[in-house]
Length: 473
View 1 (tube, rainbow, N blue to C red):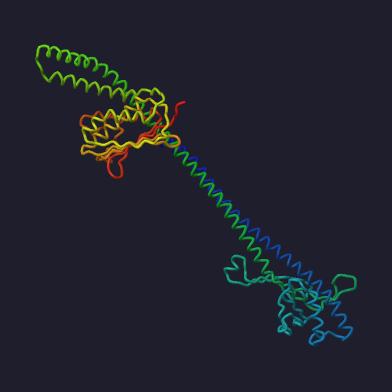
View 2 (cartoon, rainbow, N blue to C red; view 1 turned 90 degrees about the vertical axis):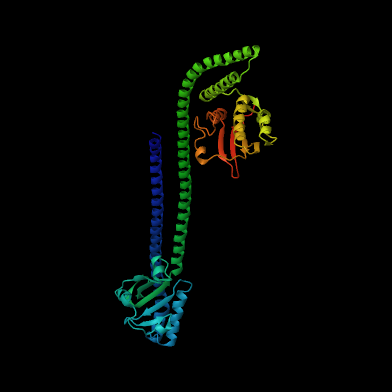
């Protein structure tokens, strides 16, 4: 049931996580596509504006050439001959004055025979049939522009060529007074604009948009990862808490069954056991009066006491009582424990080292129950050290807990035994019931605490007990 419940809890979360990640990827891809489309749109607008700009330049140049060159030259010389230096210089002055400060890289003027009559590049003057289809359209009174790009295949692929130019061909017309350009075609004007810088600015804008999108999406991705991990951690914690609750429930049911059985068995055993013990003591007194001595009676009394202690352990484990909370100090409880085991410590030639902090607060607890728990832990440590050694008891407090550490220098516990130490009736002692640690665990948990047993790195065992520091008022 638990496994199926975990799967059912995780399925909706995994579905949400899947759709969230998918949505993030789709949004990122859509943003990149939209960025590319916007960049293409900006480039298209740039090209259109450059073509319109070229048409305005052509109209202005046509007007200035007609008024300041064609009319004066025809009136003065009778005909136009740009091969003559005087006329060429006048044309050059008119063109450059007109296009001064405008973004024009090259101007070529063609005559009606497709021969370049004037050019910024004087080496091209006299070149025949250089106009191509743009010249042919201009002769037909059709203005046209084309985009020229040069660069490596990689530069062209990413839309940032080394050189980008707009080449515009337009007819050079004779103007009628007080009207727009509509007279006969006298030649063809070719204007070349270098818009490489504009394209590079657009490319930088595209890079900036892409980087911004990556940063935003990356931030969203990090936030999403954090949220997902937090969600998974919450689900894992809930599952762990559920497992602990189910374990406690099974344990409570098990203890309840043991308690009912133990109550009945202890009732049936204790009565005859009490009769046996009292009868043995009475028999011992009568034998002393008669002057007869024997060890059998003492054995009966001793074994009766041992059986009674075993029954008491059963009852303490199966029916743990609720603690009677009163103000107490852990240090004082441990000092009583140390005083109680002092004879046994001296007998086995052991040492006890205490490390008590001075800032340990007084807490609400059941001192006799803690005394019983600590005593069981100390007795286990003593029994684990047949060859002498030290028992170190440390007590310190953090913000919300009191930590008690018991460390011995015995042989330690095998890994296999560590897995079973909390199982009822499991023991490595010849005369043990296997309930001592279970009783300790019940006592500590009844105080909302925790206990952990592990092997030390050097030698021996460490028992760590953590009790919430519920201070007394």
